[in-house]
Length: 265
View 1 (cartoon, helix red, strand yellow):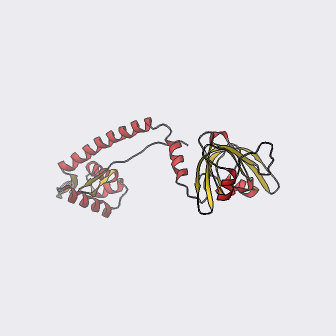
View 2: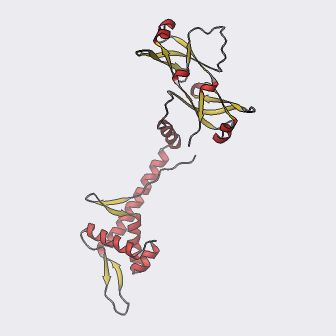
View 3: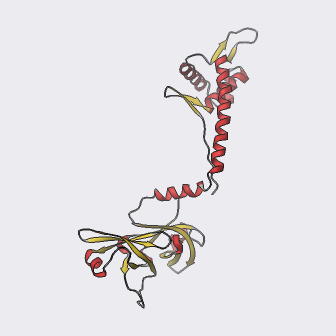
């Protein structure tokens, strides 16, 4: 994704909108054409819209920016007053300096596209407590369901089972960006898994960072390598039986069918 900073200049008078590039362009066309009709056409405005804009600018400026010329050999017309011509010239200077400022800011804003995508992901609302963003590293197609492997922060892999239809509609393929959602109630915690075998495909090891007991259940947050975290909801009884405490090594287990996959919009 290529992203650049852009901006436009807009003037106000005592909090009232005076105008921006469009209205100043109209004034410049009046200076060039000497006619409201031709200036409005050149600026892409109707005759009435042009006069409405001029009236508004005249009122806000406190003095005329545009004046009519009496008829005669030239047939009359419209021209800018000295104040109007000064405004057009000064706006061009302001706009030029503003463009230089934006270009300088853009040149120093490395990674803005990445930050923009991060902010969008952070704004995503979902009931799933665990959200991981990564890339598809493997796709194993089946007759009905597909197995999708996602590599997330810290080099961890998360395996999901989704329908073949979902794979196609989401555009899942190796290299594609995607996010995995896992509800904390779907996560099982194990304190001693040496030699144990489980049918669940996903197994993430970490250490207990927080234990928040509730009336019935406790929320346990694990810190994974690479800085990622994973939350699990277990009963208070299970928490006590496992002796869960901050700093304790724990393995989080969850089934591939419990993982929901999505892609950035």
